Amino acid sequence: MDALARLVEGPRARGAFLLQTIMTPPWSVRIEDRAPLSLVTVVRGEAWVVPDRGDAVRLRPGDVTITRGPDAYTFAGDPATPPRVVIHPGQRCTTPDGEDVSEAMHLGVRTWGDSLDGPAALLVGTYRPSSEISRRLLDALPPLLALPGDAWESPLIALLEQEISRDEPGQEVVLDRLLDLLLVTVLRAWFSRPDANTPGWYNASGDPVVGPALRLLHGDPAHPWTVSALATEVGASRAALYRRFTELVGEPPMAYLTGWRLALAADLLRDSDATVGAVAGQVGYGSAFALSTAFKRVRGVSPREFRRSAVPI
Image 1 (cartoon, one colour):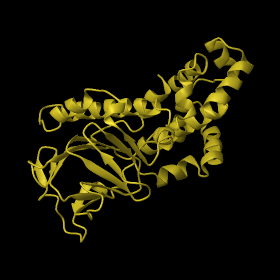
Image 2: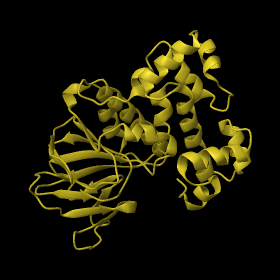
Image 3: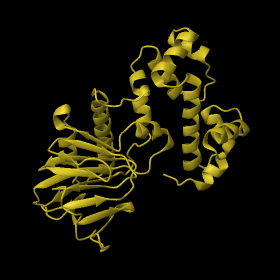
Image 4: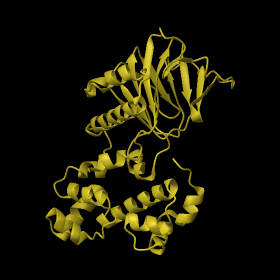
């Protein structure tokens, strides 16, 4: 499994909040839901996305934005229009004065807004709280990513628009997977742009030496890997693999593996009842003590302290 595929498993949609929004001017919706990752695409009309920090961006049909929380931002028909609706955590909708308008703006199955005939229509996908293994992906993205429609080509937006208002058996799974496909497609298009700050692990995934090494680490993190063992598997010398991995990824192979193992351990601690010893075995540590020592050294708290303070996804 390549680096992008493995990292995208972190924010993978599971019952994601997904709807079409239809609005009539003058409209403005402020988003304060603190979601770690949201994807919005314009399917009709135009809109502006206005971050609290940074410049407003005009969006036309086919344009896509990815916003990385928890910072607030606003979508509007005109950036000068003050917010008419505020979206809070849990997707609670109110006026700026706090009056609940969730029911008033419900227009049907996964459809929300002020009029079914509104000239502006957007598709909105919001992921639930992210996992630890997705942090490398989220940290590689700007707070606001805007991809013009002419910079990529995909039938996914039309398909998502077609499916979003259906209410059939298994529809939630269909929509989750379409949202994931759209996310991956947009990220690939974004990272291929010359002005993108492409992370080292993404570039390295296509390298004939480092790419296979990353796939081995991701595919079997519990294996007792050494640089020599990795080098043998990918057909390179130990020195060559170490030098090239560090150059492309930004850290040595074993440091990368440690970070990966501890991120996996953090997700297991948060989302399962497995003992610390069992988690240690799953991620490549020989004992609960070994995992606890590494976990506290890197994260500043013990696995048990992390588990007590963590919120399950």
